[in-house]
Length: 173
Image (cartoon, rainbow, N blue to C red):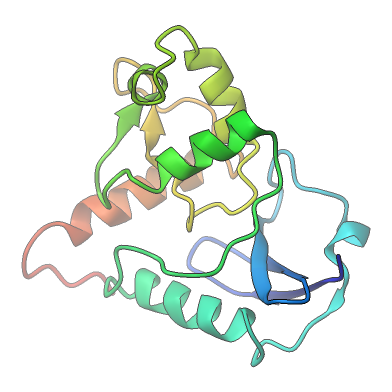
């Protein structure tokens, strides 16, 4: 499937957005941070795309609203490539409310596989659409910050940002 990409700046560094096109639609297939673990090779991102075209324009609009504290849930066409188990994990990640966290074990329980917390962690780390599919909302069993493809500093920043956004009347920027 043809792919295109564009880059945008964010409060958490440069983000690379990757779109994948089918006969029916063009959907977001990747959102990668600089120095991200499991970041695919640049040549897999496809040719440069127009940031004013779908799905980039709407993705950028929603990300700007998120970073401004105005959006807590994304509504974008996504095309997530992974194993059936990975896709189940990524689907469950989208059910974690803004500003809240769950542990890897809790996520495994939600999937009906209570002994699969390690597999959940591995799938979480391979999430191709960070921030939008909120893998940063998964923490260790004690609430500790463990692994994050974008780095633990970014994970803490995103969680702190969302925690502030849940406080009524607080200006974020």
